[in-house]
Image (cartoon, rainbow, N blue to C red; front, side, top):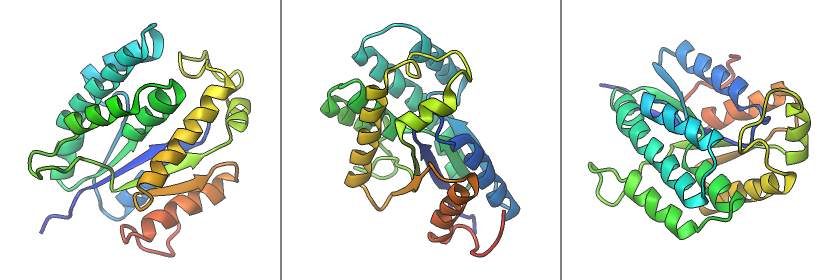
Amino acid sequence: MQTAGLFITFEGIDGAGKSTHIAGLADAFRAQGRSVALTREPGGTPLAEKLRELVLNDPMDPLCEALLMFAARRDHLQQVIEPALARGEVVLCDRFTDATFAYQGAGRGFDLDVLRQLERWVQAMPQAAGQLRQPDLTVWFDLPPAVAAERLAGARLPDRFESQPLAFFERVAAGYGDRMAQDPARFTRVPSDQSKDAVWRHVRQAVEQRGWLPTGVDA
């Protein structure tokens, strides 16, 4: 019998440490014999990566930004995420729809009802009428924006999002909190102003508690 696929997303502002722990979790699943697909949003397919470059670098209004995000997501779902889940793989994705609600919704102040409608159109599951494709688990790396700014200072040339003022990222953090409040069973919140080892333990335990990895194993 084929093992069911798993869809785990990682959310949080840049500087929160997502990348390190995505790689660690991928290694932990592979050590258990699971096939892992590592991907990201916006991006993950040739088309979505082109749209990513536009969104991160070209001036545009909030509606255009939201439409491009969901266009990239649609291609990503069809070309990468759904096929991998059908094969029984573990899909680990750096950001998904929660980021759109946090950045475009809370951060930009864009109409949340429009985002919800786009979510319903793009993430509808034809094989399960009325259901939307959502992650099985969302790991939210919650880091104070001021700490994130310190971590990223001078690291690279900022894109359209990274160059926003601190107040923008405070709204983004609040947006993530709102998404978690709406679907608490799907989320685990990881306070990311801890040591790397402490953050990893929190991530690993969240996955172990759902029965997806064995407990008491270092990885």
